[in-house]
Length: 327
Image (tube, rainbow, N blue to C red; front, side, top):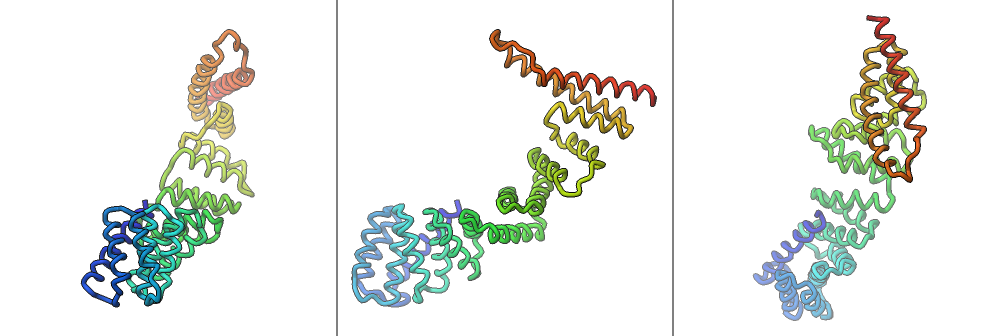
């Protein structure tokens, strides 16, 4: 999970910071602060978050801390709170550490990433997107943080910004001749749907069909084509053929309509093939209905099923008659 990876990365850098303190590298840290901080870091190595947090609080209680000491305390409290499962406390202290002027430049990005992740955990999506966005603007490249940024924009209902970010990611992948992630395209389609942007939704669904040609995506794309302003009924036969090709015919009535269109266009053999497929669907449906209605108390005629069967018989007869006339 991206948040966990960010957390572990920050923990590793804290251990590095601990080693730096022990070897007296960097700014000086007074013993009354350094000792409880070192103890907290050792406890973190053993995944004893609550005890580590208590030790870090001892350092926090020391007065007149230097800027670097204050930064170090804020950071370790944030790390310990995260390990203890106190995400809200962790988020606030990590954000404060990242904002400190004493924060080393190489560490600031990592702390911002961790703070964004903790805000995401407590569902403060506005703060999560703000800090993740700052991380990215400062040159951060971690894909997990990018995911937090986009998801936070979406979950805070900032749909326009989320769509812009996802569209940019998709374009980047396509320029590199890579297929965008299916989840990315699904989220983009969902955002456009939320915005009632029919054109944007259609573009996203067309990309889903291109990269992940699943039946449900084809259904959405074909429906979208027929629902567009200016759609011509002259395309109906082509839509029917696409439905047959992609397995998106859903009802017996659709097969009947497709067969009739083929007959009207002068393709009786194609119509007969469509009817055969419709028969197979109707036969399977009849078996299902028979099983469902086999109980003595439920025996009755289903008018819709009977009428659909009649339509198939009539269409089959028309197809055969026209086929004989053209043979």
